[in-house]
Image (cartoon, helix red, strand yellow):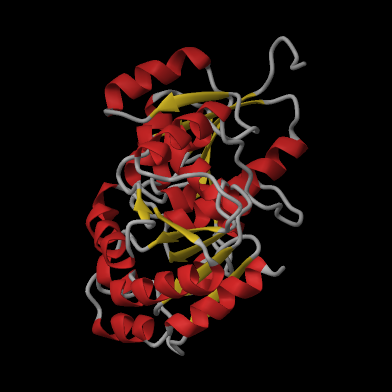
Amino acid sequence: MKPENPERILIVSTNWIGDAIMSMPAVQLFRRAHPEAELTVLARPLIRALWAMHPAVDRLETMGKPQPTVQSLKPAHFDRAYIFPNSFRSAFIPFLAGVPRRIGARGHWRRLMLTETVRLPDGHQQFEYLKILGVQGEPPAPQLAVPEESFNSLNNRLAAAGFRPACRTVITLLPGAARGPSKRWPAEHFIVLAKRLRAELGAQILLGGGPDDAAVCAEIAAAVGPEAISLAGQTTVAEWAALLKMSQCVVSNDSGGMHLAMAVGTPVAAIFGITDSRKTGPLGRSVVLQKSAVQSRDIARDSEAARRALEAVTPDEVFAAVTGLLNG
């Protein structure tokens, strides 16, 4: 039970699924250090749905247009705000809401809106959020609790698509990625892999992702055959999490879906091009497949070098990674 007047903490979330999940270990450590505090997360609607599944959070606020958002925040009289994104807007709203202590990384002309600035460390991105929150310790795995009703609605969707529960391995493929071809393993490779997973392991192949991934997922499902089912663009965030939770293994590009699978405890075979897996790699049981010796976050959306690096990862190598994960 929390005290009558707990310290009220506002956390301004990042705007991408992967970044939000990489910040969760820090929030979990913060909760352990401050069990009596009231934690509120301010997030855009899509990311708010993600934080709604996080057990460390007490309240949620929606990031919308500045003025309505500020008016929504003011009555809570927050004591502190921790600002995860490195953007002007993310610091401006707590400033306008009158939060007396506002902590975040410097940059983007927002120094006057922060009362305390931190220098972000090197290493994996998860440690940046530990630094902002001022917590120490070994980061735990990100944690999400998927609601039971999401499994129920997902099963209804799968049944309507022809999925029949059976004693077989379920493997979900996530062929999408926000940065387009520079992060996407070729669809042809996913098709070869999926056919082999079906032929040699008897696996049920599911495909997931957001609306932007629907076309490539439909292409792969059509090429693999009628037992491959795509739900890309047809699920809520919670249903997507349920889909990944019910899978025995996930094959994913470097994407938010990769991190979402980790947060629900499903092992991942993660395929990287020239983005830095040491910075944004999966947090949990996984195999990272990466051929490029040069790794940089500053890549073009349609980088020829990244496409070559992705193509160099073969379906045979990913198949071996999946079988290794399935065998523990």
